[in-house]
Amino acid sequence: MIVSTLPIWFVDMAGSVFMILFSFMSIRLVRLIYRSDPNSIIWTYLTWVCYCLAGFAISRSAGHILKQILFLMDRNEVWDGIRPFSGSINTFMLIIVSSVTLFFQRAWHIYQEISRDKEALQTAHTELLSLNQNLEQRVKERTEALALHEKQMAQADKLASIGQLSSGIAHEINNPLGIILGYTQLLLRSEDPESQKHEDLKTIEKHVKSCKTTVEDLLNFARSSKPKKEFFNIHETIDDVLNFVRHRSDMHGMFMDRRYGPEVPRMLMDEKKIKQVLINLLMNAKHAVGETGAITVATAYDSERDRVSVMVQDTGYGIEKKNFSRIFDPFFTTKPTGEGTGLGLAVSYGIVKTHGGDLLVESDPGKGSTFTMVLPVGGKRE
Amino acid sequence: MRRWVSGASAVALILMPTAALATQGHGDPEGLVVHQMSHIFFVFSMGILIYWLRARDLVRHVGWRYIQYSSVFFIFWTLDAFTVHLLDEGMGIIQVTRIDPWHLRIESPPGLGWVKVLYYAVKLDHLLCVPGLMFLYLGIKRLLKESRQAEGGIRYEEEIS
Image (cartoon, rainbow over all chains, first blue to last red):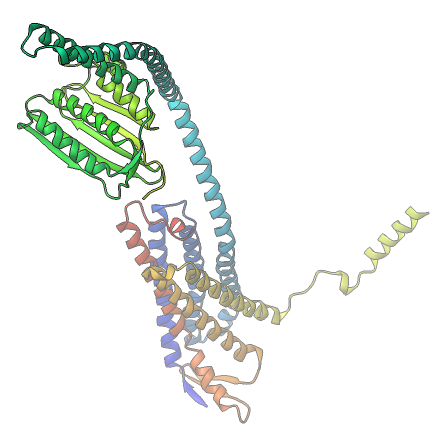
């Protein structure tokens, strides 16, 4: 079979030129990409591949072009001399490209492990540096937290001591007060209601009742009276208390907001006592707000701890820092004489503690206060 | 006595060399064998590269997909070149004679006429290796573009780790 060499010659020559052209264009681009991130193992690999393929293309294509020219010039013996070198370089370049590709896989795994170790070391270094830099701050924070905790413990101790003392005094006073009240009411029966003596006895009765209320408050604070627990809906209780407070005080210029949380369960506790706490907190909030302002009552249920939070927030004048540690002390009040006994918060604190809860307070002087009653749901749900 | 025997043996080995003890010769077919082995090695490595690109899902990037196509063309090209070398120098089943600068005579044993057509076709191997290099160039061009588009360059190491 006799065939034309023209197609072979043409494809060989044009192909050789394109091989050299594309290999050099690839090198130009891969150098640019390599410079963008010289540490990248992928770009390093591609650079090697491009250089080796360029070496292969030059050796092979230049050889092919030279071979065709020498054949046309009838100088085959010159090509016979060059051929072994051209072929060897081709073989050599193919082996390098193949080796680089194969070892790239292994180098890749090693590189990955080194990168992971480097990252772990950098993280540890950053953490150590951060720890070193923030150590002083952290010690300060911990010291402050410890001091606050100690202060809270001291406050709790103080309230417990006052509670014991109050309880003892209240017991001693309660019985004579009962006798005085009984005899006063007995004497009142036999007196003419229009007489001066009847009026005097009424005054005695009124003040004895007032003393008894104070004594009961003290007993509540001292947790001496056992709560009568029953299941109730806290939202209904709050509504009752809000209606009661509205009727009792002038709250026309005030904005009342109720934000009841979802899924708040019925609670097992002494509803009357909880009502008393709510009245105390709302009356305090009203007093703090004055003529105009806002009071928000909100509830939330923490299912993880099985506790309900009842929050009473006001936009009043807040609590001054110097008074903060004393607000739960019995007989401590900032209200004018005659407007408050100073037992409201103390009694509320006692009631909440009796129910296994906590009464928390946050205040920003001039902006308002937030009292949060955290209560356990208690008992088996209905 | 032992020292004397060792010395005598060493002298005998130096004075009476044999072919087996001399440096190995590298005759004519060795070059072809090495070259053919390099082609096989190249096919293997390109196959591994394709596997690696696909295993790490890099081929979803256009640039790496072009590099994959480049590897496929190089595999076909190297199989083509392997066949040419085999027919030209290895098997001796065809006889090629240059009649003039523009014509060749290809002869084959009776019954193997198709080998002549195959030989002529595989001689046009640039039709495979040029697209291979072209796709490599296009792949790198695309990777460079992506690298420039992403601020600070694309870290494929992070992406595929």
